[in-house]
Image 1: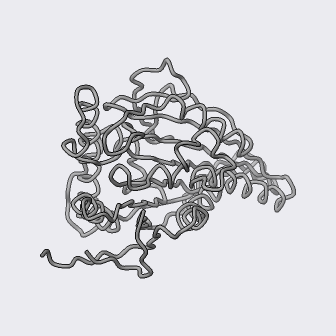
Image 2: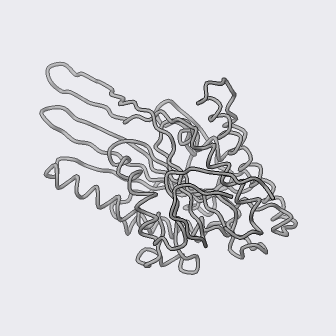
Image 3: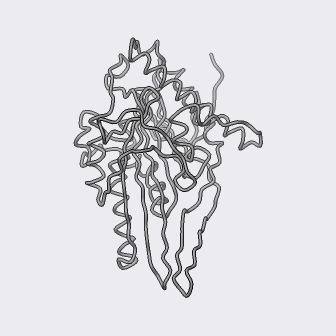
Length: 350
């Protein structure tokens, strides 16, 4: 019998937790920070069938109608919450603050990037610059002004997402999906124009099942191999960042995978990040569950350097330009989500 192992997380959500409770624990704080000017990321990690897509989007059989579904996930609820906050900010400042929001939706499949808003796109490239950081070149960004418009973008892209059947989960996503919202605000007060920009990434990772367990063959076998590679690199990045936080000098292999390069700011960079570690409590999934728990424990060691991206323009006498960065340190928030088990403690023993 293996020795008992103890894992500590920020929150544990069991099968009795409602979708609203999941959103309150996972999404609200990150989205509030994004409206305040910080970058934010929420991503779900775990094996196929552990509840990642259900938690992030909602029931898969109602994928096109989850906007008002009672079991809708973090992303649809996040749209409502985000635009509700923007409306409150407008009311608080008597309409003197202006917001511009844009949305994009991409997938990484077989280490290639596809724009889900442009079915004809093939093999888009990652670029980086000082202002934007890492971004997808030539991706479509749609302007959105309401939660309904944001969900319309999500629905349009979801139809184009690559889904393949495996014996473990008939609708297991064979790709990583990244839905991003870019938020810009502008407020003028006493001759000073204050501008802030932030980015919210909502990520649904592919399942981490082993090839022999999924019985994949041919094209799906190749896809599974690339998925395992990208998730393996993600694990290596988490491990290297954990070592750096402990004071050890270690190279972080961001560029070894499109996924980790794209999410570089979310992992040890400028973003408030929440990681949802999804596990299946079945004894048959012991190995995958232990792997997910170890991944989440290492992620807790990372320290992100986050700041508000803010620029002030002053039009008094001569033109004056100032850039303000409000810097703080923050570790990722890690939440354990259990699909069919009830736990009331903040620690889990295996």
